[in-house]
Structure formats: C-alpha cells, structure tokens
Length: 296
Image 1 (spheres, rainbow, N blue to C red):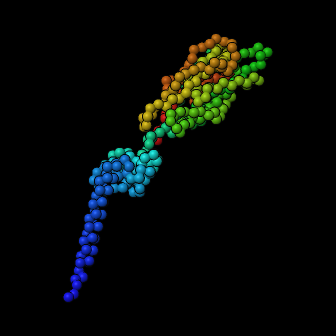
Image 2: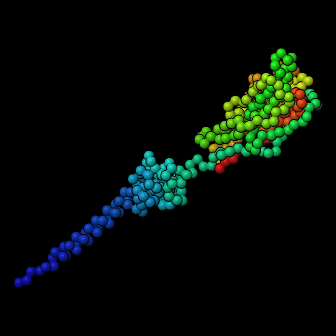
C-alpha cells in the first residue's frame, strides 16, 4: 500500500500563510506605535510614515516627521530643528523651513535722504564766502577738527574747521545695533592756524545738532551727538534717534557769548554743513536729512 506524500506541502503552505499574517499584523502594530511618537518623526495619524525622507523617526536629524497629515514636524531632538531639522507645526511642507526662515527679515543697512534740510544759521557776520557741502551718499557727520591761533597770538576764536564723515553699519546679530566708522574729511573752511583740535562724537554716535559761542565771528562750535536705535521685531523694525548729549568741549576758543543749541529737525541726522567763511568762520549751520532703515 503506497503512502501519501501530500501532508508536508500542505503544512508548508499553511506556514507561509501564517508568516504573511504575522508580517501584516506587525506592520500594523508598528504603524500604530510610530503614529504615537509624533515629534520623534512618525505621523500622529494612522498612516505609516517614518519621516519625510530619511531616518526622521530616530529624532537625530533627518527631515522631521509630520505633526499632522500635511504639516511639518517639530524636528528631531537636540540636533534636529535649528538649521536642517524640523519645520514648523502645521506648515504645508515637510521640515527644513524653520532654520531658513528663523527670525524672518532683518535690518541690513541705513540710507540717508539725498535732499537735506538746513538748520538755522548762527553767525553775526555777513563777511567771507558762502559754502555748502555734504558727505558722500548714505554718510553722516561724526565729528569735526578745527584750528585756533597759538595762545600768545591774542586771538581766541575759531579760525577754521573741517567736517569728518562716517559710514553706518548694522550688526549681524541681535539685538541689532548701528555702528559708525569715520571715513573722510570735507574741505577745510576758514583760514587754518597752527593749533589743531579734534572733537568726535562718542562711539557709534552721529551729529544731530550744534551749539557754541559767538561774538564778531563764531568763537566756538560744540556738537550734539546721539546713537541711532533699532527697535521692534521682524519684520516691523523701526529706526530712531537715541538720547542726545552735547560734547563737553568744542572746537575754537572761549571768547564771545554762548548761544542756544540748534538741533536737526526731529528724527534727522547731520550729513553736511553750510555757512560763510574767510579769515574766520562768519556763519555756520548744519545740513540734516532723514535716515531710513532697510529691512530684508
């Protein structure tokens, strides 16, 4: 009597069916488990997703998982998120945008209006020759040099002056600050004498007005200085003139009588000067203009 040989093949078929059932069951369980991780890289819904592209569910980089069916994940753990890690929750695309867009637009530069406004001109004399001068494009006044006669000459008024221009720059890190750097001097006005003087605004300050002393001529010029202040958050930054202080010592001598401060119009900064000069400084005023913050 011949023995049956069909038993073992049937057992093999049944084992294959059982194996496939186990794989399907394990995949469903994995999907359910990774769905619960959310911020670790998987979805929080019922669709299996180990991250947007690479190894996101490990939480160590990758592209970050999704926090919803179409939103960006919150990134990996310590190394995800910042520059290459997760996107913002609910974003339309997967991770990676948060690092590029963090902080949004920022201040990049300051422009100065090319159309200035003249302050009141101080000076009792109509002598000398008129002058008007401006710094280069987007430059401002940051100080002055001057000359006076030697002490034994018996003349103690300002004989000449020369404006010092500077450029403006903005720091690349927050809080954003405006810095100044002296770059060039304008034409000397008046009649230069042997004794030189230099009066500069404080670090990162610009000229915003002047005061001094006058009699027959301009005896002395002292300048009002202030920083430029950046306030606000992206993209709504603002630029304003900060606290104003007067130079404790001006260029020139102690003669004449003091005159009241003559400031630039509110919000403006000095970018040039005007007046009359010959053997001395007959008249003096500032040219002022509005600074504008560029945000990109």
